[in-house]
Amino acid sequence: MNRHPRILQRENTALLVIDIQERILPVIHEYERVVENTLKLINGSKILSVPIYYTEQYPKGLGPTESKIKSSFGNTEAIQKMTFSCSGAGDLFQDLKRKRIKQVVVCGIESHVCVLQTVLDLLAEEFQVHVAADAVSSRRKFDYEIALRRMESNGAEITLTESVLFELLNVCGTDEFKSISKLVK
Image (cartoon, rainbow, N blue to C red; front, side, top):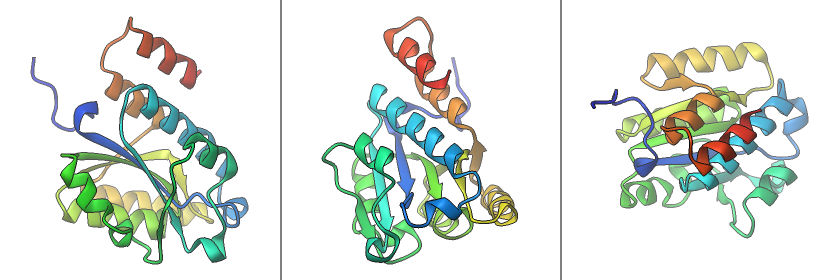
């Protein structure tokens, strides 16, 4: 059976969590939603063995990653960056290519700056990008909405956390399905 080429496939997908840092988080529109859905994406990716990357923008100024999210990564360190786009986050893009990643699920903040520039750069590098709209945000709702429209008009898939997890899962009736179902309830 042929599946649509824009449906996520775990064998060639990675999750990228962008700059969900403590000092800026309190001013982000609906930041609780962003944290909650990011945790679902991280935990679901772990269940499904999907590689996960996370970045911090200028941690000296913006502080570390939000504590619940950071603890979900265990001993894995954030990729620190000074550029707004994750294209400047060390060899992140090259590592994705080395691992033959073709689809990247993106979540984080701010939608209209770091997320937007990263998405556009991933698209320029011919990755298929899926933005979890319920796991990204900006300080202002208007900025978030315009950013989503701009990403979509440039070729990104705008999706939802639950859609991402069930696309990666693909089938029901497994232990993974039971674990993912518990996550999204």
